Length: 450
Image 1 (cartoon, helix red, strand yellow):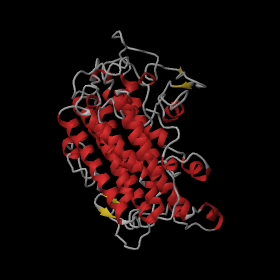
Image 2 (image 1 turned 180 degrees about the horizontal axis):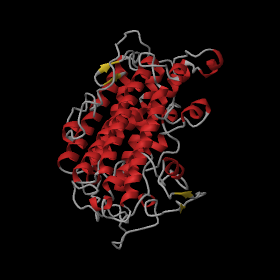
Image 3 (image 1 turned 90 degrees about the horizontal axis):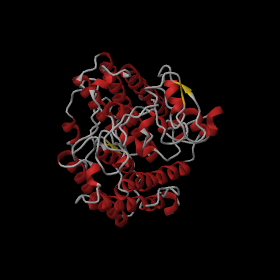
Image 4 (image 1 turned 120 degrees about the vertical axis):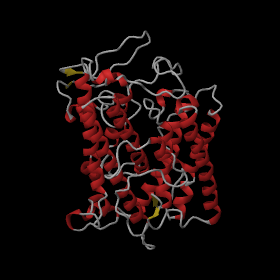
């Protein structure tokens, strides 16, 4: 990832070449935190969250800067730099996703946490998206679609159930925020994937799950022409959309990062203090009981690895099969999404980040036999992720690996199955830490049935 001293033109091949079993590349602007042997699990968890979100924020700032430079002078070099900055920003943000589903500041749906921090996950990372809401696509007849945010100057209705009209005469943060998931979850107008579509464009013929009619080839991603940002009638609106969406990501991550602030780096974040039961006075009722906190964290890890990553992001794509349901379908960066999402899970489970041990971990009290089982399962998972990653870089992107005629599909199916088993093992981890969970607690009841 970029740091303030690194240049945006750093090679993506270098970024993604690091070993998976270590830590994925990350922004190195984080101030090292001294390891304390007696640091509790919740302290370790909070410190990793702060470090990870700080890295994600710094990478988002670099993305914002690259997009602004591209908007000032759109050419092939600045476009490539903006794309590289997006890819690198996903390395850090991808790891933060393991903090989801734990009633924390990224996605709490109710209570003071949601009221204070706004639940920005859907604004930052909503997918899959209906790209027709944002900009044109090529339809089944080879024609450009219209009636989207970019080509509408005035009132825009995204369509869908209970949709509301938004004025997009100017593409502002307020406008795209109001349009995000307006009328349906696929009506995405903000976040990383909105930017991804604007930078790369359509990757396939969306009228057919497997027909690669837009960008042919196992190693071809979306190829939006530079003219869309220079000579096209809507060029300036696309650039305005990019700048607005990138600025919003920075703003949203600032809020989330502030929740995890520690005294070493400034004022202690309200959520961090509550998680560590440090609040007093009028805020004392916001303190989160240690058992409740651990239950939320462990069950969240289980649901994330089992239902979100294994099921929604892998199983739905490979068993449908549908490249429209892969996470980063425009840039063909899904192999990195899988790697970084898993790494984020591993970070929390082992209390490590960027190769640094942060203190007590959830595995410390697990019995030797169960710990060995978890370790072997993780080794097997990491081998399969490394295979997906390597093939995506050298032979076939994820969208080709999931095709029914692909020799690589079995590896992905096995990966999905092992991740689901690992999710169930979080019940064992919970019990070892004095928390009662069942497999239902680590499974999203609304997960897609495949």
